[in-house]
Length: 389
Image (cartoon, rainbow, N blue to C red):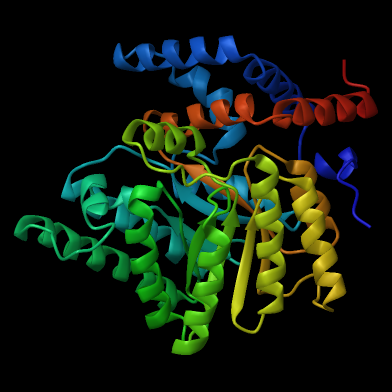
């Protein structure tokens, strides 16, 4: 039996100073008004080029990011590895729009693959389509590529070349790469290309993962269809399951444009489909490799129970658990302590460039029911156990 209440294991990688910083950070992000003001003040300070970098780097950046470069992030990776927790280097810059920037991002993603090739602590790489292509091209191609203009088609073909270069690098390095999920109105483009990449590179081993956001009510059916397609075409299917990251945006857009929301009617419905997907994956384990990207304790326990029921070893390489750096250490470290395969997403990049990511983490911890209070309660429990004042 695994207990996610064991704070000695959960925070064994954290110094007393780390715990104090985490305590105050989660206290702050638990205050919705303060977070709202903090986002405004931070964005203003960055626009005015005020010297806030040193404050950010020693607080929220240190909690949720590995460093400003791959080299800086390796020290965080090494620290995680001491406790059998692996690393997924996540180049977390956003908002780029030029071909030069897109090509630079591709090179950086391939650099993370090459780092992982020679580093046993890094089992996966990851990237987002919006980091290497204009959002509008992904949106225009969502239903079909038939109506793309000549110029749009050039941009789309450049996207295909970039994706293929990343997936080939992953294949050559024997280091699988995750393709992250994004908004529903560009996700069909992503799914279509991801499946093509799996058909090309997942014939003998897993090199490419697609991501399914289970807060969408159509994803369980899509998962089953993906399994059927993989079996028909004789390639392996690899999926990362998450609940999702764009709920409010999705609902607002659906209401604004007058179409049915793709989001589940309740959180309970998302939870049910997530757990059904875990079972579906394990029932097809000869075809499916799975990464459960969840901060939900019940789902993590559910997967361990399913693995036991189906006689699957705790360290079967086809099954991974994953959480974000700086969050849910009670899940990550207790699972790794029990021998399960666990990885932390370790975002990195120049501080100014990763601020959108950091501000979303603050939003997420503020808006997800119980997330901040759970994190804070566990930190307080461990501080009491260590007798930290």
